[in-house]
Amino acid sequence: MTKIIELLNVGKNYRRGNEEIHALSDVSLEARTGQFLAIVGPSGSGKTTLLQQIGCVDLPTSGRILIDGEDVTKLSDSQLTHFRSRTIGFVFQRFFLLPTLTALENVKLPCVFTKHNAHQTKADELLKHLGLGDRLHHRPSQLSGGEMQRVAIARALVNQPRILLADEPTGNLDSSSAHSIISIFRELNESGLTVLMVTHNMELASMAQQILYLKDGRITKVE
Amino acid sequence: MNIFSLAGKNLARHRIRTILTMLGVGIAAATLFSILSFEVGYDQALKEEIEGSGIHLFVSTEGCPLEAASLILHGGEIPKFLTMERFRQVKSAEGVKEAAGFLIFSLTSPEGDKVDLFYGITDEALKLKPNWKVQGTWFRDENSIILGSEVAKVEKREVGDKIYIETLDLDFEVVGILEQTYGQDDGFYFLPLETAQKLFKKENKLTAVGVQLADLFQLQSVKDRLETLPDVYVVTAEQINQEIMRFIGGSKALMYSMLLIALALSTLGVLNTVLMATLERQQEFGYMRCIGAGKKDLIILILVETAAVCLIGWAIGVVGGFVFSSFAENWIRQFLAYVPAGHLLRPNTQVVSTSLALTMALGLMAAIYPAFKASRVSPVEAIRND
Ligand SMILES: Nc1ncnc2c1ncn2[C@@H]1O[C@H](COP(=O)(O)OP(=O)(O)O)[C@@H](O)[C@H]1O
Ligand SMILES: [Mg+2]
Image (tube, rainbow over all chains, first blue to last red; front, side, top):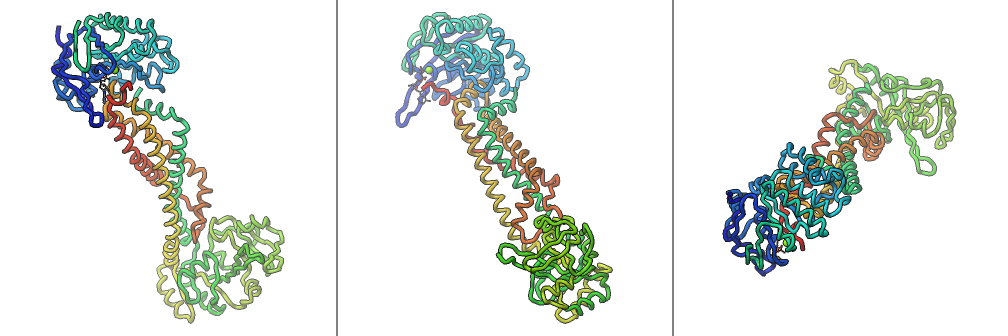
């Protein structure tokens, strides 16, 4: 299978006042199309930072990142935006749904920016598929946590990305909702989507094909 | 879903704030609209009045054109007078078709709170004032009085009523009331010339004479001819027009400074609202960027939101400007040293489009900084968990 994600000696430093924080140091990894990877590690170990580098919302301080064969560290901001919107779907711990939009509108939101109006018609279908057929016109405040996360997953999928990135997607959910979210990921993965998920929960991580252990910005173990 | 519906939902989020900002823009737009309408209307009304008055030359004793203008059009007194002999000479001069004599007096009420303006006029005045429509009849005897429409309204008099003029301690019979001219004439009392001369002890005297020419091309030669008469000063309607324009310049400057304040306040209001709406949405902008929004999309979103506020505010302002135009007209009149007959606010399509363009331009200017702010949001910072 083809390599869809490849990181070569990636480092990421942040400045906080005079202090330099090495959030990632010399991280190399690769993922093949259709893999399901879990990233685990203690808080502050650099998991989110790693996901942001792969998701092209930020550029590394050093090293190279190849997504789908493209060296994204060489792209301009607007090129990155374009690339990201076609390739990556993001799911966050805190859902990040726009409070003024209904579930359906939230799912359609990425299409407003990509101007793929054809994809808008998919939103409906995606939500129904995720069991939210009777919640289409509810606002986030009227939904449960698990429902909100499913809306966010539909939103991440609407532009038909190649990679789904999830940063502690179950962190704000009770365990039964968490399990249903993970089974959605597995199902998506089985249909060919590459999934990278950050989690605290070892039980959930064990449902992935591979687990990367991160500590102090370094990969310490791959299982 | 598109960028416009998204902008609409964002504006609906803080409904009160949005509506207040729109009202602020509306007030500024209404002011702008009214003043632009006034720019058009005043010049037209003045021209119409001068052209329509049928008076081509004003004859008075020596003085400046401004005095003559305010005398005949505005009402006022100067202590110098023409004689009836001059009036007859002017009337029979070559090239003069019609001439009417005026004797103008102002009386302050005993309490000093009110000034009444009296015009002694000859019958010819009716020919020189084509816009006059008299309800009732013209003067019947020396006790007749004709009231301007505003005076009639204030004094609550109808044709046939008696009116007691306190300042003169005399009774008159209201034989006629002038239909509203929207000009200065609405505020005058009109008396037969002889009555006025007797009352004010100016027998045989006139303040000024209005002259209508047989042929306008003779203007200069008739003017020259009349000026050979001793103590006579002649100004043309055109000169008066220019003089009026010059001396209301100050009032216009005052109006424009108020407009400037209104526009500045509304622009600051827009800036404040849009900036607040931007700063409180940093995190939203951050995750919108993660799910596919570019810097340009955020800039466009802010501009669309601002444009919507300004467009609706402008529409409110223009509708309000139309609805309250009589109110605005009265308000503007207060600033003016001279008000011609007819409507002062005359909006046209250019007024509408200019006010739209200016309102939008100012609003979008106010949006530049917030839009720039939004484009600088770092998605990484915005969505951090801590
Ligand atoms: N934008 C930032 N500025 C400064 N420090 C940051 C920033 N983002 C993350 N960090 C720091 O980098 C380290 C890794 O953070 P993060 O990737 O969020 O860890 P995790 O997701 O594993 O909890 C932490 O020490 C964190 O404080
Ligand atoms: Mg994290």
